[in-house]
Length: 127
Image (cartoon, rainbow, N blue to C red; front, top):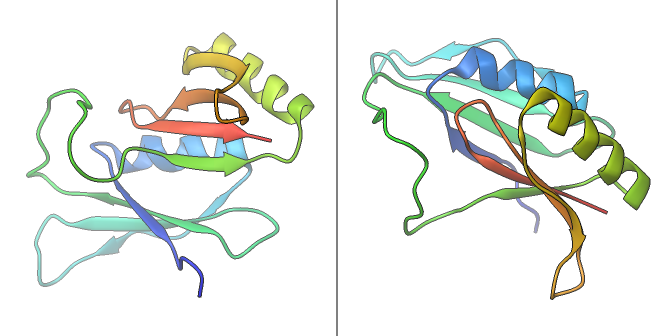
């Protein structure tokens, strides 16, 4: 078994797609417009060198409030392979204003930083 993909709601699907391409070198598929659910649009993000995919989804019914904690999925973690890659991407995101917390070793032993998508969705970048 493996996870086929992870799906994230976003208010701005084009900004989210550009984020994944810019920071992760991902390719992003064409928008899918649902015929059954008017206003629903999704795009699949394909991460390099693997089968990992993220589905970006949007719709006009999404609330305009901030990303508060709630029951359900909280974040996705992307392994970059080593500390140097985490440090480099964290520095790049700091310059661009999307670094939430800088690199550190967590209490459970992960070396990680947290960056945010344009709408505030957190993404952990790890070794």
